[in-house]
Image 1 (cartoon, helix red, strand yellow):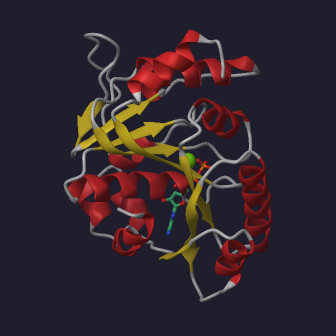
Image 2: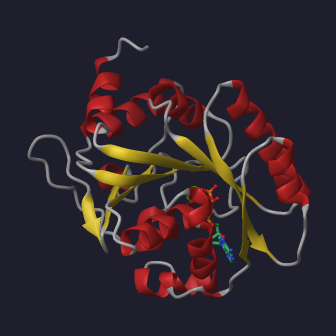
Length: 243
Ligand SMILES: Nc1ncnc2c1ncn2[C@@H]1O[C@H](COP(=O)(O)OP(=O)(O)OP(=O)(O)O)[C@@H](O)[C@H]1O
Ligand SMILES: [Mg+2]
């Protein structure tokens, strides 16, 4: 257990959050932020108090996908996430706006700890966390600071992506991080490779989300996002996630 008081602050802030799902994936650009954003929206729309934490500290994108404002949030005692279409959203974008925020070494750990330690999530049934690509500091820090966070691993049927997701599942297994399941994104033709990968790691295969050209135009518009085939298929995966 860390002696950093911010880690204890983070636990206190998350005390009334029932489940934490971190959307991870070994490669960039495979749809983690899209899955995280639409999952949070779908969960909130089904009546569950839901939050969304963007932990992509150098390149946050959930505010672009959902269109939530990046004005500095309310700050009574700690920081209140902004409520956007029923989802309580928090991102480094509230602090850095759309300026580049270079981070090296301990900067990532510090920013992650501070975001977790200052945010008033209050009572949530679900907190979705959008993770940056890869097996870097953010994944390791989240698993260390919030060991109950369950990882929802996004893959595609590309061999390159499957290879890196295989390594990610190995790593999550090694550090004992719970895995909520594997979901395939941008599916164009049926392939059994993602389901086989999930089976090899003894984790749940949640299904496949179609390649959906409507997604790009729906960015920034929650109603349009929820009307996509992508959202419809993601909705079908919720029961397998216990949602
Ligand atoms: N199923 C899909 N069909 C069509 N386009 C998609 C699909 N999923 C994601 N995209 C598009 O792919 C691009 C990357 O998606 P997204 O930002 O969600 O990926 P990411 O894994 O979060 O990327 P990064 O690793 O950079 O954080 C976006 O333009 C998004 O609209
Ligand atoms: Mg992303």
